[in-house]
Amino acid sequence: MNILLAMIPAFFWGTTYAVTQFTLPDWPPLLLGALRALPAGLILLILKPTVPAKQDWPIMGAIGLINIGVFFSLIFVMALTLPSAISGVGMISVPVFAMLYHWVVSKVKPKKIQALSGAILILLSWLLFDPSAISLNPMGLAAMFGAIMCIIVGSTLVKGIGNRIHWWSVLTWQLIIGGGLLTVAAAVQMLITPEPYWQAFEQFSQTNMLGLVWIIVLNTAVGYGMYVWLLQKMSVVDFTFGGIANPIAGIVSGLVLMSESFSFYQYSLMFGMIFMSLLPNFFTRYKQRQNSPADTP
Image (cartoon, rainbow, N blue to C red):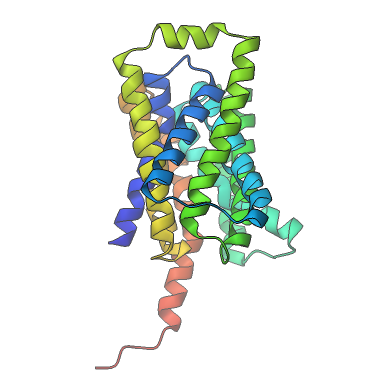
């Protein structure tokens, strides 16, 4: 049951790209990031007020900057420059980059199954992103790589404070701090290049409103709230299985909202990448069951 619940936030996150392109196509990424983060953080603060201890503000500032400020900006650059399916599937490469990062930085050698699945995933990514087969925006691809690194570094920081700061406080204040930084950055950008901001405000429509409600309430407040709540009730391995809804939502929402269409070969590569990203967790789960003592009557 928990795995099914874990599919809900993963599904919401996977729709970010297509929903943004469909409802907010010309909005500046900094503005979208600020609108996604700050209202959601304030909603969570109202629901359960918390204030970090004085000594925790520096690390909370770093987490807010990386996990929200930079990450949300890059996500919306991806959403506005890459096909939804490509964005959703590409982000499942996070485990491979995390494996390499911890190997280099923390000297944690990956398991054989992780190395094998990572190598195959890289090969499938190379084939899917082949410039001769599909035309992709270089800025969007650079944003994807940056977003992946934000997840890895930000997750490492959050894990380091998990034992002393309550998860609700981390969730709430990273959204508020990151959203505040994005608001300042968006205000500066508006002073320098006001045209896209005025255009967004003057042409504000019901479609824009629906997109913002989806992104702020469902995608962020509900999605992130369920994410941290479920992590208290299930293992990271189990939660990862729910994450399969993320790239599938990207593929389906891109098809439905943006009429994205790929060849059978390209869809095969996408689903191959999804499977390879889950393979180490399938293997870990299988080994755990094999090593667990048999139930006695």
